[in-house]
Image (cartoon, one colour):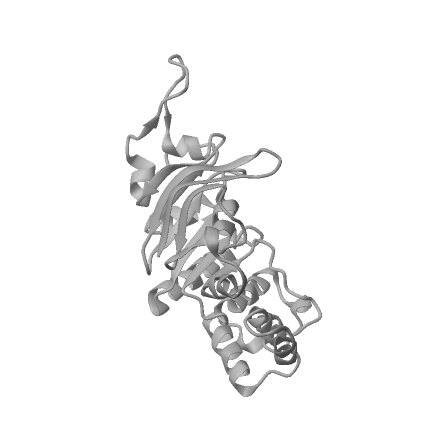
Length: 267
């Protein structure tokens, strides 16, 4: 479903965001993407949904070479690979229904898309309510987004992704701005999408404890490189090391490589 080989991304300012990444994600997998700020997590997610192009290496998503997609094929890929941004990007004065409907923009020609947003058909409204039901937000369907809590706005963002009927869901720090109880609820919603609908789900997180508790697979990035790919218990206990560039450098555990300033490396 997702296959990367030697994947690298360098931006115009010279920043090397990803370096020689090798990664394979199968259909129906659920994984957390861990790493400090600047590790390349967001860059990887944006590459996976076609928002960015690789500088070098190979990247295939749903059988398509990302480097060659454009136009209609790229729009179709983005429908099948939903992206949930860290910022909720809700329109405050629009209702929950219309915010969710915005997930359908781009799937139709421009004029039909706008007509559908203003005057949705019964079929489109049914799609909306199915998505809202999945995130337990049906009772807020008519409410303007500006009166919703941060956690509820995040659910709107998830529902907006679900209305695309995607095969892959990419979530970029989806619980960065909510409390721990809401964060747990959001993670559980994503877990249900994986278990009940078979969606492949990749979530980038800063909350290490949530990743270790809820996700069967951890993908660790540090300075644009893959430093860990495996189960959470091995990230905590397995004696994996990275050698420093100089012989006198101390060895660092994989967890320390991911979070060098974390107060504890024995989670």
